[in-house]
Amino acid sequence: MNKLYLSSAIGAALTTFSTSVLAHPGHDHSAESSNLIHLLWAAPILVAAVLSYKLIKHTLAKKSSAKDHA
Image (cartoon, rainbow, N blue to C red; front, side, top):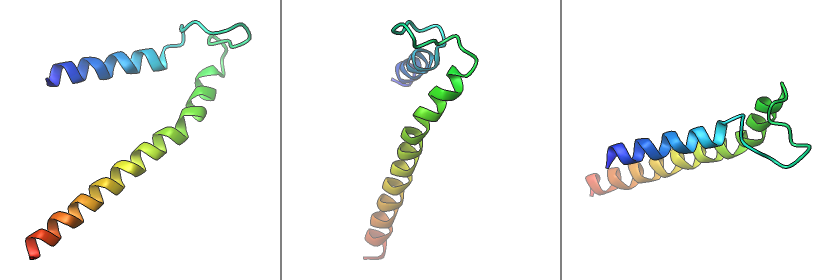
């Protein structure tokens, strides 16, 4: 199961961050600034994912500590 998850994650990362992905005309992935522009576009998604993870982790920790004290 772990190998499947790792393979899927690597495949998704390669697909997402590949600079040779075909795009519509006028959307140049080989331009110097394309990686920066795509990173700036994806940054809010990454920030939201990290914040969601931390919030869920904090909430679950709070619930488990409340059960321990009860």
